[in-house]
Length: 199
Image (cartoon, rainbow, N blue to C red; front, side, top):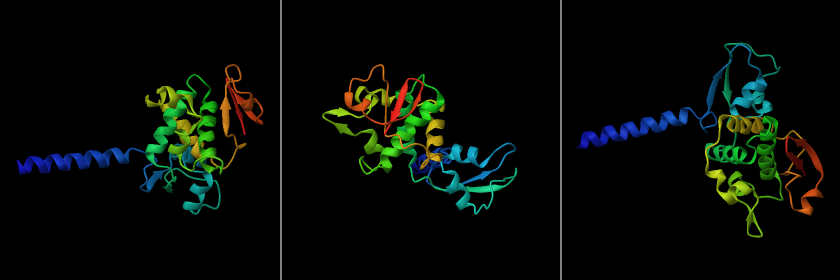
């Protein structure tokens, strides 16, 4: 019986470690070997780190890279559970929207985290309530509990890589269905698909 417990514990630990190893944004330092055709931007987007973070961490003085080079991927500062939460919100909010729109929705979340006018964590931004209603409809109706697809996950990583750039969008809405006069008063930054982004 003791041996069975030891085997079960060892299997559980091994499975847990294996799962962590396959999350590109896990907190542990990740190594990446450059493949033919990759660019610094593609690598940064894959792991959800900024272009400049990738260059600084690896002490790169130019943007030229070569197949076989090994890079250390810096910690994104965003946990794997927050990345999953963002991807589920993007999936629910931007299903059927262009890929750029999905990246823009994820960017709104990150911009809110960085803004003094909103909570300072991903989870708090996603679950924020005002006047008894959640800021994001999928949190209100439970759609956020559905798993994200691969494109939503990729969009979140690209938004993480794009952090600090862009036009500072803090809101998005569908002008055909929005009922708030206030949202129409915000400065529009871009329109992508059915969504209008604003700050």
